[in-house]
Length: 508
Ligand SMILES: *Cc1c(COP(=O)(O)O)cnc(C)c1O
Image (cartoon, helix red, strand yellow):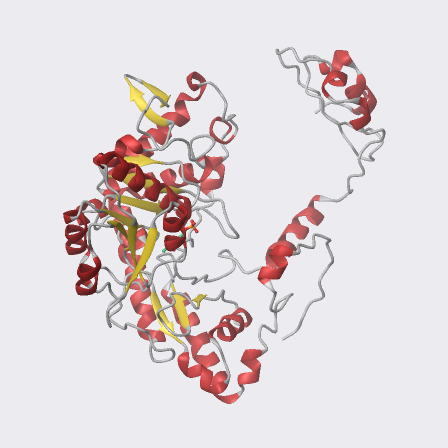
């Protein structure tokens, strides 16, 4: 910081060719009261005069009108905004099939380190050896955790991981000369599964679950034939159940030269204890933003890293980070590769958070996380089952699914219970998915919640159950305490209104 007198004027900074050469053109406007200014640092690179870079017609004639606010006002503004929404830093977020509940704050500092967050994706390989090494090491460690041979960090979401998986299946079958079209998918699958399959030109074929919610092995064996290109299985399933027969299923699929894809979005219930590779899985995607702690929501940011068996390694997307001696190289010279999937080499911010988490936990720590996630889910399931019956009330993995069918007799739907929970200070569980459970209500507490929090949540559900019987209108008109009530989310996404108005506080 310098005294005001040395600060370059707005006009000088913008117009003077001298100033533009070898300096960062920053805006310093002495007319703003209280402005203290700063010295413009000299850079030792030659840059053309600013007037050449920015056409005259696009230049401002006046300084921008920035709001004048004090630090406390800025802080209060953002705190107020943050309170308009429910989020993990306020209270329990028991959304099922999402595993995104723990976001260590130190990760934000790590991912923003200038040498990591500040580098340009086009920077020459030689100048980014550090991050290439981190990505390479993470790929190696993730492959070990999953019991597979190679990893691609390119996919930016679970769904993109599935897409890559299907592209790898396609490349493998083409190479084998196989004309296979059908991919089997259990009826409890996440909607992205059949979508990814269809997008890659395969035909999804649904296979039924048995009464206990697991894949029906006998029904599966009947439909496997020469046209079976593979299967896509979520393990544990979206019902929170471990697919005990996956080994036998894989054997049947491999017998017709099919491949096994595991949707690993629920790895939170397996890591450190068992490995997809040991269940004869050929390809698995992991939602790093779910299982490995990245704040996400509303569509991103994400990473759907994919791990593969060695027979699929040649097909992985380029560039692949390879280690040659002590150097790391972005290898694109891979003739069998499915090509590029991501403009650069993955969503590195999310990947770095994931690696920080993996290293800070260690193998023992990750297994402890898994055990705690399973214990929490089973503790809560026992408390919730008498209130809202659980579809498959045997020991669950990291989540369980209740059916809210009985509340319909009182004119109350699962979405009403979800909205009423907001008045009790909780986010709702996932509702109406998986499709095979009527009026599904899917709860995933995760490992980081305390017993006291789980008790409060069960208590809130118990109160809502009483309201449903005594005063159902209170539930169907919820939420009563939030700034906005029931938003038409699909419409809001299509006809976006970006004008800011201060909403009036609603009262319970
Ligand atoms: C979240 C999820 C996906 C899709 O992952 P995205 O990152 O949202 O694309 C796929 N399968 C299951 C079981 C999931 O929970």
